[in-house]
Amino acid sequence: MGLTAIEKHLARASSAARVVPGDIVHPDPDLVIVHDGYIATAYRELSGLGIHRVFDPDRVMFVTDHDVIHATPLAAERARQNRLVAEKWGISRFYDVGQGGQGHVFPMEKGLVRPGMFLLCYDMHCTNFGAVGALALRTGSEIITVLAQGTIWVQVPHTIKVELTGKMAPGVMARDLGFRLAADFVSGRHGAYDYRAIEFHGPGLHQLPVAERIALCNTLTEIGICATYFAPDEQTAKWYRDRGLAGGEIVTADPDAGYESELAVDLSALEPQAVLPGGEKTIPLQAVELGRAVDHAYLGSCGSGTFDDLVVAADILRGRTVAAGTRFLVTPGSNVTIARLEREGLGDVFRKAGAILLPAGCGPCAGGTMGPLGSGETSICTAAVNNFGRMGAKDAAIFLASPATVAASAVAGAISDPRRFLEERSAT
Image (cartoon, rainbow, N blue to C red; front, side):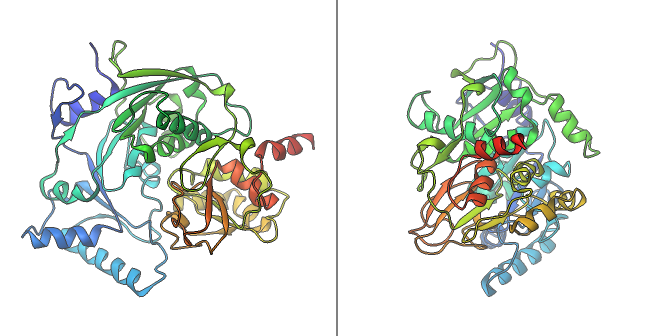
């Protein structure tokens, strides 16, 4: 039996001829990424063990993206310590405030993450990198072991194959697909999903640009999927060429690869979705309380902050304004995206509509360090999660939706179906 793409990545990184689900391996990462919230902690813990250097400074990247505006003295002190740690450990790839953006996005845009790479990362949303044909696994606090030794034990996961067919209708986006898949997995409809990897296949995937693939890889993370993966294709190659970057190694599954389960999704049958506050349930947008007033709309996060995501929102906002009583916060995923927004005039579209453009990074999704919610308020956003208290007051209600739905709701001042706005645009 052949190997899945996930198994091939882990076999190469572990210098093994082949691996199978359940094997314990010690893979050698091409890159290790640690975000700003854990850098100083990792340094203290390793120093306490008498370890004063990392395994290979050239393969370690530090990223400041959760707290890009130091709103408190404590945040400023933590950032200062992070800079000292980077200097002491000799970390040349330190992307501090204003130098990169969201750490699950800009490494791809800069070519620091390329197809064929294997990464070990502190933060769980590193699954994003599967959008370009890289494999990244989250370690959490055990990243200190990786920093010290250069590896950690990993169990080879079972892989699920998702065959995509058809084409999504206007107003439907990859976040909608991700929400629907996540809900179906949690319901038990597709069997086990915890610590599973997902590979996307089928003719339907070729219509999905890299931005949509990032959103899809990201959305499934919160239910316990350990990795998501798109084999590189022409969409991937063009994405790197457009940025003047070379691609990497193309890793694809063998034709006779063995999967734990397989399922097919007809994209043409999909409609806009929303996740209810608390992350407990995904339902079709039409079944949500349409017309419910929103105080707060947020576009960004590691799943929906790419240039393409912002283009979708700008198309809805152009010639319209954000509703009175609604604040619309927009966090581009990277400085590269900010520069392109200004170059192509889209920054003015957001500003004229009354949206608030924030610095590149995690934005309100990082625990509400920017643009938090007040008591009893309602938000509709593209955040990675919507647990109660995630972005401020614990009694605030956070709905998750696609960039199109968020932009439409910001204009309406209430939860709204983006297809209505698109129909109005096409009629004119």
